[in-house]
Image 1 (cartoon, rainbow over the protein chains, first blue to last red):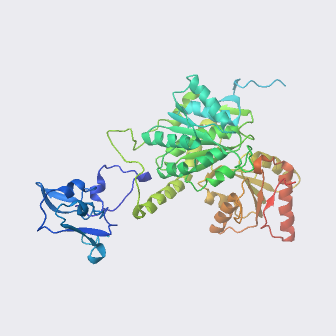
Image 2: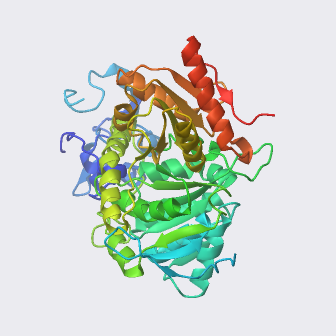
Image 3: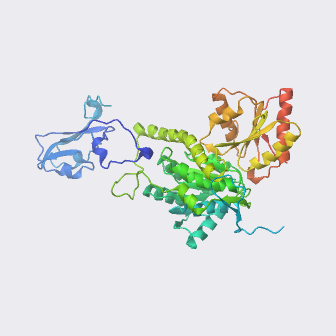
Length: 105
Length: 411
């Protein structure tokens, strides 16, 4: 994941490079963070299907991690998880709120 | 005297510009339509409203007659008119519209969208009072209300200047250092419906002058896709709005340089301000719009009676040429500002407030009197302006304060 780049806006706020959201920290207003119990995860990938962003990182059909730079904490994954192994935990209980080193803010 | 037929043409013998113009008898509204014909914008979206109707009426006739290639969009409202222009310019073409008063008010939220997106749309405005009471005549309340919307505002004194501004506006708006929409204004009826001599440039010269619109980014440029109008968070919105402020300040130089280029063709200066008998003037009146002609007559009469009066006409109200104004007004005995708009509850009307702020910030402190005239289309006569000058002279003599706004022509 690219660290947040210095923002130089094109006149009028035009976005000249499509798909650049991947480079932007868009999850910084999350109130609750999804936390998974990997012991109970069956890799059914229901969370990956339901995530309205693309904040479930998967590899070869298996759950790897949450992309906390982009996850907005909507909780849909926790709601839909069949084995109920995702919990939504208050961000305030974590030391860094953005899921990154916290220095880039 | 035999009236001049509206399409009659006279060869100009006294042209001082490098290009031979053709004199036509045109109203301000038709003069703008003529400039639009020569500019041949790609899209014109309009909803007619008095007194800007002349522009729309004439231009739609040109479209119907195939004299322009313009896609004319007869929209259902002014909000849609400006929205169509916004979209057309974002798509990558040149677009223009025209409106007045309630129509401009109805465009309000789109005004900010166009300037915020930095789209060089040109809006031809015929100044008219805002309801209520309903009144179709000229005053500056409509455009003065739009002064913070991020549009460049040019005001014309007569049909000639309305034509000149309509051509210069295209270049100013599209200049890469500017990229801001331009609102070209003329007083409703006083200018829009007054038929005067207008020197019209040859079509090919205008074509050369306005050139091609080549936007850096366009929605229809499918090779280089871009996003227009994304949500911008507090993290970046401030900087984007400041870019508009910087562009507006760069526009000051651009307006003057395009004015010089235009003057080279026509022989008519097109500066951000116009001065009349200012060199040795002691008392100065600052005006906007058609009243400048009346003020010139008044000043000539005052001069013949020994009063050293002068005139400063503001052509570019946004950007406000503060430095130039202060250079010109510094050292004068007193200045009278003649507004044609009201700002209820504000200390003064808009032009006075701007002149006052410009002078104070440049350390130019002098007696500054506030006058308001012509609200709801009331005529202003040279006599009233002469009396205004005389009252200032008298107040200066007895050392009386000038801080009370006076309203001219109130019965």
